[in-house]
Image (cartoon, rainbow, N blue to C red; front, side, top):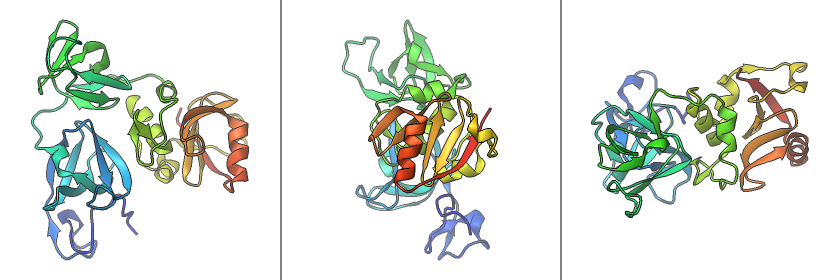
Length: 281
């Protein structure tokens, strides 16, 4: 059965390319849009009260199949394939391909070439922007924003160590479905950190467990390397070294660095054993 998280199909409507594969009241062609907000919530239903599934970041492309009269649009993110409802106001027709991405956890976009001006927007790690020119220490975007140049990296530049990226999120509040320094969950931390290093990664921990890196055997799992991923049912953590992990978790309600053995024992006491360990490098 197709994963509903990754399949743009409802009983009443589905993507045209699924015709003959799923049952739906009608099939429609999708229309591509770009995320214009710094962070856009993708929810389970067309309501601000609906559960947060994930977040889309500025510059991401999304294929929209349905838009209602209450300000919501239903579609599929082009990057990781996640399906859900987005606020219509966060969508704009694609104008140009992004040239840069935000490389700091957060940065401020100013309306002019001065850091004394009231910021126009707050951007987060992974947001994509189109830089049209440089003005002294600033990168000027197509929106007319002035970004600190040191916080905007070329679109094809990548971090060397995704674990170091994850460590920068320590102290970030835990947020189910989140994937920014304002709040993120365990698999969001993994996805955002790997993306910064140029590694494509699915959204949820069970998807990551089934596809990222290679599975370690029992003998190998006793000797963990930096960057290994430890999975439990519904949770994932990143190995820092032989003694510690970094993970976003609801126990601390934050991203923390924790003694690996203590965390494993605590999670086991709560009723969950390790289900897999995967190695990326």
